[in-house]
Structures are given as C-alpha cells and as structure tokens.
Length: 163
Image (cartoon, rainbow, N blue to C red; front, side, top):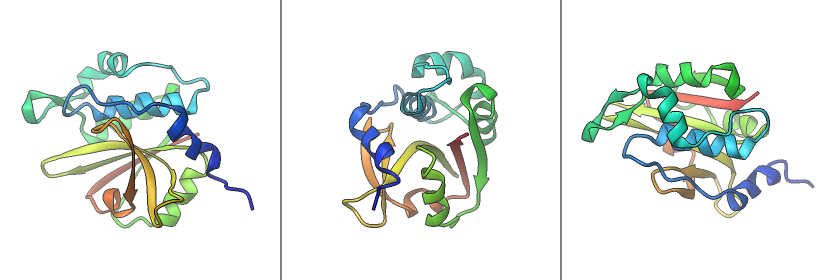
C-alpha cells in the first residue's frame, strides 16, 4: 500500500523550519514555509518580503507587534498569486476534512481566539504519533506533532489549501 502523504511528509525533513521574527508575525513565516514547500508558480518570498508587501493588513497586537486579523489574512491568501483555496471552518470540522485537504499538499491553518491567534502549516498526518499531525510551527521554527484539537476548537479557523 502506498503512503498518499509520503511526499508531503518528507518536506518536514527537506525544508528547514522557519521561525517567525516577531511575536506576532507567524502569518508571514507560515506563508514563507508553505510557498517553499509547494514551489511552483507562487512568488518565492521571504517573511520579510511578505511583511513589507502586506504590513498594511496587520494591526497592532500584544507587545506592539503586528498581527493579522482573520479576514485580512483571508484577503491576502485569496490573491491569485498564492494559488490557494481559502475558507473559514467552524470548530469541530473533523479530522477527515483535514486529511482530505492534506492529500493535495500542506495547508495553512490560522486560528484566532479572544486574546490573539496563531498561524501554522499542517504538512501530513504523523506516522509516529497516532491522531496527530506534522505541523511546521513558526513560533518554534520547526516541525512538531500536534493533535487535531490543537487548531480545531477555536472560534475562527482559516484553512488555505493549494489549488
């Protein structure tokens, strides 16, 4: 039996993790890793270039840093150059939904809560850890194994998958 996620799972070892440069620019670092992983015709920008282009989308958050509101991140990722299907999901959208999206490649997951939010890139289901996903987390700048509940229970959940 073939591993339908194997090619994407290997990206965790082939592409170095990207650490966000400020406490609230995970959205830039996640997008940089995602476009490196998918290659193709997307602009190969760094998080600094992404921030320079989209700083006006951000708002001042904790520590006077620049976080991005959910609707603004949706607007950014919906631009044709990123070649992404972007949608909001309600909490508890189901692991099957996530697995189906991951069959086409890594996905950006943004989740927001009353005091802030975070953006990560889910890469593939984990083989080592049952019911967990390999996720590039820009807060740490590396891939970690997270359970589905890590990002499926918040009020606003943005999913961006490759087209």
